[in-house]
Length: 137
Figure 1 (cartoon, one colour):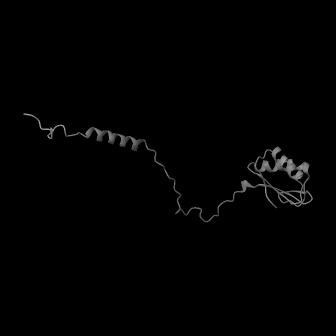
Figure 2: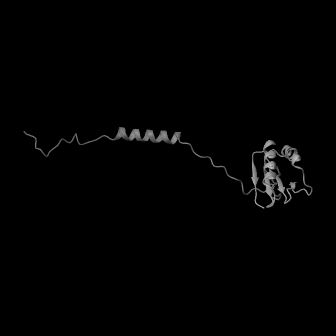
Figure 3: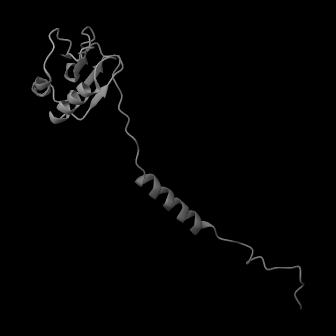
């Protein structure tokens, strides 16, 4: 008997998918086990402990304010008495010793000289302060 062109064997038409499913489940287990999960921290908002006290003010971040007057007067931290240009570095050193994280803020007057501004900035850099800001009057 000859085989007809349109007929096939029933044994060849079955494909066994069990090994492929085993591999997929093993990969799934591997990725679930090795995945990192974020642990979120929560704040206990229902706590009644110390809710009556106000939060502490951050006094450690006091900046050093240097104002330049119209006559090139140098005022340090709002003091009424001006200081000399030769005293700037020693005063900045003293204030930096009290607060090492402080930065210098310079507020020049419109009529003050640029030379005075540069002297103040150089004194602050020599005192070891790298964060110097200049604000507009």
